[in-house]
Length: 423
Ligand SMILES: Cc1ncc(COP(=O)(O)O)c(C=O)c1O
View 1: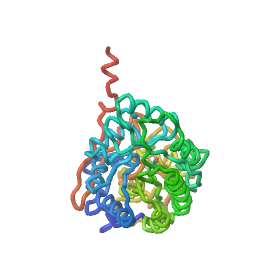
View 2 (view 1 turned 90 degrees about the horizontal axis):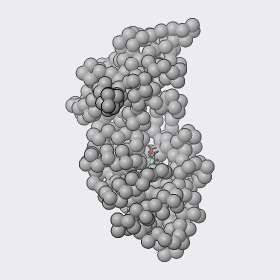
View 3 (view 1 turned 60 degrees about the vertical axis):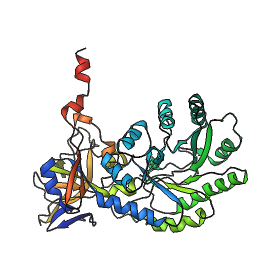
View 4 (view 1 turned 120 degrees about the vertical axis):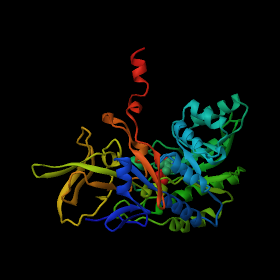
């Protein structure tokens, strides 16, 4: 059985620790399922990114869609990181976390009128637009409030990021962005946009990208467009390269941010502008684990199942993308690995699994298991399906730890339904 080890999640005397805190201690105190995040991991990844690009002008915006817990956003914000939001709800969260409005950028392929109003009203650093209709609407709203809107166009560079089709976003066939020729035309020729100031061009070609090649290809296309616009007399303030940096969940070979920097810097150095990045998963995926408890072990014909108290509603990635997460004991009991099982949750769907055909020592009831690499696209995708309350979240900092979101109560489940029921 392979264990996922890192300096942030490590076994000491056969007990799994997050930094200097025993995961079992947290599980006993707050119950399960609970997400646990390492503050040091978040800090180190931010510093790694900063240092890789230190010799070019750049700004990092944390894509909080990967993990929008206020304490996670604030941890990165306190280091100087900006935030990329994708909805009014994420904007609400970024503001609550204390992020300054001039450090927030607003992305999203389908912003509503209200979201555009909020973006403008809060004087965000920029609104990213993904269609001509959206640009026209931003212009109208800006006109009505007497403002000039800072807008960047998300360009679809038509490159293959070679990742899961659901998270590939930079191909011509994807719903995202505007093609380069049309972006050039809009910025240089489109009439009637007096309340728009085009300040940048952006891309985000996909997520969990494990090679620098598609970045080089896409950055080359974007920098060509930047230079073409410059020749046409338009000077943009930034180029935004989005997020997408892949991480290791199993034993995928990924690249270091420093390698990405080396590969794209020759293209960026030719431009006279700020370079924006929007990493999400890179900062958060391996900052977190989801700890669960075994309810039962059972056998159906030839197949073994470990039924745990967490499920697809808490961590959707295995069900939705067939994603792999290491699952390992919180306490190594030294038993023989003699048991191949699916790890499944209590939800009434066969699609409710956390892992398939994994090897374990024969698990005992009540044992704690850690589902690794769960810090990105974990809690943010959690739902109340099957009337399940969403998990608690804990942030570890060295030898101390703090509850940063309590397990939901039953009241959260019904919101205002009871009140409305009796109206
Ligand atoms: C516009 C944009 N920026 C950044 C990200 C973050 O991607 P990742 O978590 O892969 O870094 C996404 C993810 O979907 C995105 O859509």
